[in-house]
Length: 216
Image (cartoon, rainbow, N blue to C red; front, side, top):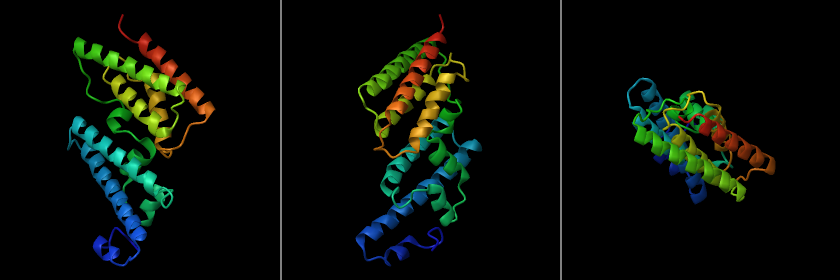
């Protein structure tokens, strides 16, 4: 059965079991999110949408994908296999939703920078606060994916507003790498002690590098 070619309403009436119908509707939602993300990525690559509009839309789709996948993960453990089963040609969506977990503007550090001194000062203060919040949360044993991931996302976005930072700063790469790693885990998954220790070390290293790169 190819869900991409059949009419959803026709498929739904074949199922009398409410649970089966709900599962099929979830599959249809997943299919739609993948297709929409593919179109968004292509629009961004072709300059058909601004970086700001792209980022807002992409973050929304990533959030929807994460929420839905946590629901259907037991029946769809491999999203790429789901895409192959239904003949979905969405390589850019796979990269964004499955492997990266963040908009291209954040992943490749191409967000529009704020140039004014006042804006930079605000961004620095926000970044410091996000560093402290993330590290304190780990020390308080907030180690579930759905607790850590939003904190790292806020941190990365704050750092990217600081226009004086070098684009190839190791701390940025490290935090983005952790985001991608967490993105592939269930929301309820809790990091093991070794991972928590490593993440805390990486955050402290990134914080020290961040402070060292601020204008004197």
